[in-house]
Length: 638
Image (cartoon, rainbow, N blue to C red; front, side, top):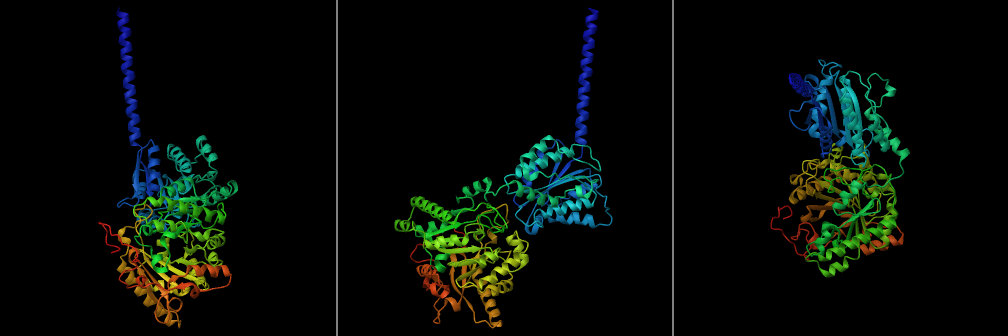
């Protein structure tokens, strides 16, 4: 019995010792874990993509993580890396206008790090022993010197301070592969930061990373941070995009323009996709005029029948990412045509078919006038301005001819980034060139163009307008706080093109967008647009007189509901008795096109009705319709 008792006592004592050891080891591990320095994840975002990836990465670490939004005040990640306990940092940086970091993040991502680099008290080894990773986000359609340029610069600055790079990557945030490539980046960063911090490190791809890379050819190139390797063995972040592009060109066939993610977003917003790169959508003014509630500004200015107008595009891709884009950048971007190409006949047939299907569905809308609904089954006009850059489509001339052969007039809008296409364009009922800014700095800020020579392209496009014998329009979209001040700059641009018409329109607020900071305060009132138009008209006429030109402009029409005014040339659209002829004789236009002979503006113009003239009491609203005011109207159009 004594022996049994001693055995039980010994086992009990051993159990207590084991429990004590387990508790002690657990506490030591927990304390060691708690004492490990935080990993800093600093992100600079515009649309929220960088923030999304930052949170996804933070959730995967077992170590403490400190998320730092570069747009917030008093955020100093580099000071914490230099003087604090932090030894590891990840920077996730999006690209904004001109290839720079978003404006509200520049103090942290640009200014603070620049101050450290140029401070003689901070040596070239100040961040020695610290490790970092950089993830750049942007669109690969931008020029190489802009694509993820902010991430490139940040990486160089951190390396100048002696920090060791363990990974860097460029992600095209419009690609279907972006999430998979992020997984590659995240896995390598987590694996690297799990190792003890050393001054020189070499991160090898484990099996998981190798498998991920093999599944996604665009990430076949490794991107290590190996400070002791030779320069020829080191692939910098600025080289990654080029390497990836070369790999894609070799391994991938010609692809469709719209990714599955983009297609889903566009369909959700009511776009009817056609083939691989075109779309059609019903304009709200079509519905308005079907119900007898007024037509669009083109009805007032040029006499189109809004309910017989089809809004379409043969190219969903654009070369700009304008801050006022009413499509919130759901469409792809590009500087050249690199996608599958659908035939123009197919695009026109499908566009008309899908448009008529939408007209059919509109019959159930309360208040639709049956006579107009039947007439709407015949498309008379096509506004090639839905989204994207229609002139990018390689077969744009054949597409225009297809529309004209069906007696459909064409209103083609271009963002003035493809002057060579403008040069070879066949006659269009009315050709628009968007003049979104009066100077190069404002153009970069408001259009966020993919081309680094966007300003020069705009100028060349305006020069080419002079050679066009048909109606040309310079369209100005005014955004308060962005592009309304430099009237002298606008006048100088208009002198280069001397267009038939100058449309001046206040921007339309289309809801909040993560890609833009526009609000209702960015939208001008109609009286402000009228005042601006009058001032611009006087300034332009003064410059024309100074240049000994016989051309003069006047305010011909305005549409208060659209906050729009149009200037017109007296020599082309006004008789000697002062009667404006801004409307179009569409039947005559089609006769002239079919004749194959050269023709000009005078041959298919038509008188502007009294109610459509600027200063008329109708303020651009067709008296044959009935204006409906909402109870909570904000007064913009009133």
